[in-house]
Amino acid sequence: MLSEIEKKRTTVDIYGQQYVIVGTESSGHVRLVSSLVDEKMREISSKNPSLDISKLAVLTAVNTMNDYIKIKDRLERLEAELKRVKD
Image 1 (spheres, helix red, strand yellow):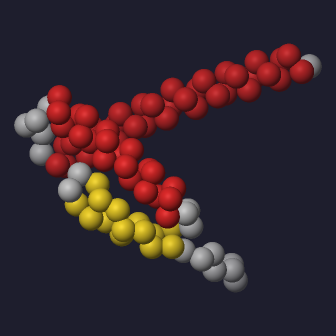
Image 2 (cartoon, helix red, strand yellow; image 1 turned 60 degrees about the vertical axis):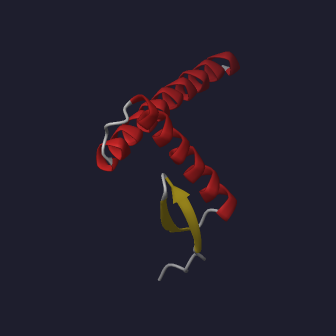
């Protein structure tokens, strides 16, 4: 049986809604992530004020994954370059 990892509950506010996030990350980390999501949602909403909350959430997720993929690709290129330099 797997040992239980202590999970923390953190209440955050994202785009005017309160959420309880349960996980193993520190409350500070959860609050940071939540504030970045809130910031991105507000940024997108300011450019597209007619979006309903569901579409706004999906566009925020798409934008975030786009940024993630770009950063991941960059990291992989840098790791490959570093490996070439070491060899």
